[in-house]
Amino acid sequence: MGRVKLNRREFVKTTTAAASALASAPVVKNLLGANDKLIVGVIGPGGPPYAQGRNVMRSFLRQGAEVAAICDVYSPHAEEANAEAGGKAEILKDYRKLLERKDIDAVIIGTPDHWHALPTIHACQAGKHVYVEKPLATSIGEGRKMVEAARKYNRVVQGGTQHRSGPHFKRVEELVQGGILGEITAVRAWNMGNSYPAGIGNPPDSDPPPGLDWDMWLGPASKVPYNPNRFLRGNFRWFWDYAGGLMTDWGVHWIDTIHQCMHVEAPKSVCASGGKLALQDNRETPDTLEVVYEYPGWVLIYSMSQCVNRGIDAKGGGIQFYGTDATLYADRGQYELFPREIRKGTADESVLSYNMDPIRGRGLDQGTPHARNFIDSVRGLATPNADVEICHRSSTAAILGNIAYAVGRKLYWDASKEEFIGDPDANKHLVKPYRAPWSLDTI
Image 1 (tube, one colour):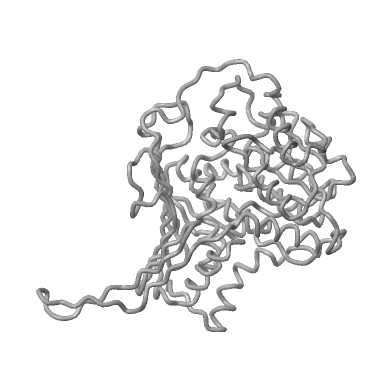
Image 2 (image 1 turned 180 degrees about the vertical axis):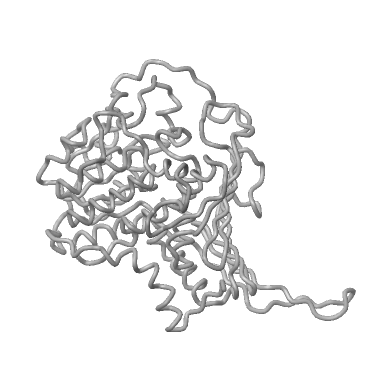
């Protein structure tokens, strides 16, 4: 049932589901020439320690791209990013002004998660290609709208799930699909750390710092007073209006790699349990969460805690594929196959052996090849490794975990309709309301 074999018949069968994510991908028009310089705009470069947009920008610069404009609602972040990009970019606070520039071919979107959907959609409407950070969106409805925009306007849209471009993760996929693990009935992914007891602290609400347009930062999210934890140091991810905790932060990366390696797109069901159990701060998302997904023939368990002293196998995060013949561990820095132990003889004089040799490998950079893949796709030399549909499916699975946690019961998922089966209350969580005047109504 869970066995994955790489003979031709089974390979075609198992890759059909994964390939269907790209089946509706358009033949993109108005691509750059193979040797043309890519002109980019950066929307939300961010600042240390959360500067995802700036990190991606650096990868683009290494590939010879030119940064023509930078938009950030906090002026110091834009100015710092401009200095890294050569100091010649136009600095803006409204991304819509950036999209008006005819010379910009593509945009990098590194904003907090609640600002992923609208800039992506508007960029596609403006004829720009898009590299957008993960998770694709904060709701499943937003993600689907982003896919529709990419297809309608024939744009390359790549998600920031860079594991898809990592050579060692491709090797992990080959091992899983090659059948060496035997029958795979369970996969586990986790993120563990310890920030007990203070967590991110409890700073009081205050006035925004000079140079920050707080209302624009909030955008479609609810209007609330400025609080440093909602803005600084990437802590936005612990508030539901802007993100989804570790589930949609790191969880999306692990789930995406699991989807890649197991050649699947979506779970059949999900249940979750956890809560804010120990940390004494003003975060809203849980500090402890266990999510169980059912896929055809196997289960996925995602475990998260921000108040434990030792992770699984003393590792802070990673993936384990559990097979009847071997277990395979992978993270960004390595992969290792642990063969099944075989003991022969009496209990007192047993001889330990293994059914195969161990396999180990080092992880390599994923960010640079992921940027290169996007640029090559814009030039018509490749297809995006993390096409918007693929990133949407992986982000959806992570969001499903949060919805199951919110409603407190097992949910059954219809991936073709993108709705829960027989659960209208759970379906209310598929779309987030937007604060006026922002709207997703028009693509």
